[in-house]
Amino acid sequence: MDFKQLRYFMAVVEEGSISAAAKRIPLAQPALTRQLKLLEEAVGAELLVRSRQGIRLTAAGEAFHREVQRLLGEFEQAKRNAQRIADGQMGQLRLGVTVMHLWAPQIVRLLNDFRQQNSEVTLKVVSLLSAPQIESLRRQQLDAGMLFFPPDDDEDLCSHCLYEDRLVLVTSSGSPLAESPPRRLSELNGEDFIWFDRSATPAYHDKLIHAFQRRGFTPHVVQQGADNATMLCLVAAGMGCTILPEMTMSGAPEGVVSHRLDDLELVLPLMLVWRRDARQPAVDRLIELAESRSLAPSPV
Image 1: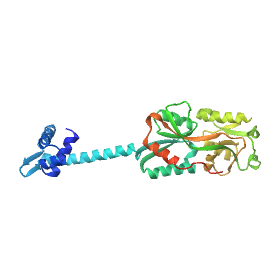
Image 2: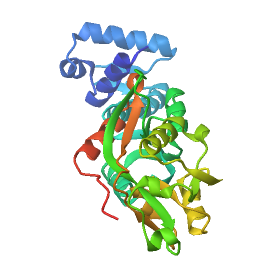
Image 3: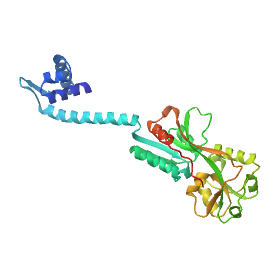
Image 4: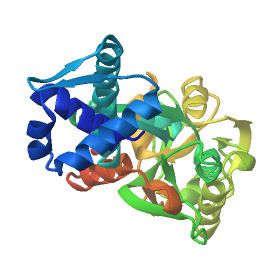
């Protein structure tokens, strides 16, 4: 038994005769009769009673007809669903996002627009730092990630730049640094500095430290935060200053201000990253949407 035989059976029932069904399919009438016989043998029951007036269903045939109608309907829906998933219109997109970008207006708008344009794609957003996102992508636990500085030498990953951010000095609004903001990194030497542990995201950490050292700044770290949100809260509490991507200020607590430094020139490309061998159509749709607009952060 196969779907071809089931469709032949349905055509005969709908047309009311084998000859009419044979013309509709089209198929030679003897061949169609043979296929119906094979179907009955596979089912193990007589399904059709043939007469000069046409055909009628047996009791077993009526029950079989109802089930075949349901089965073929589900099969057609399954094909449509598969086609929509292949086109990126349906399914699930598991997306990693760095912590502070979860409430950055530009990223929020991008994700909202994606959801509106792809209402049948379930968007599962996971908050992760850059390094854990890379590991989750490699383990196929994420379909795509939004992160800083993906590894340059990883041929298994593809990336697209969403936008380029810049770094800013972040202080509490009542600190001396806020009253008289420095212009250069070297002016921060000796200031209480809030930073993060290198193990959290080594590539990002090392690029920033190297940029500091090139400008003659060595952080005097007095407190560590697990992520940007924690570091902002520590700054707000007056425990020191820090340096963060400018876009993180969109989620800064009250009492925190940012300052641009003349020699803090490191560009932070926020990248959309996915696996080369497991590219999802929904990721293509997200890339197309991102490419259609500018995601540059607003001036702070």
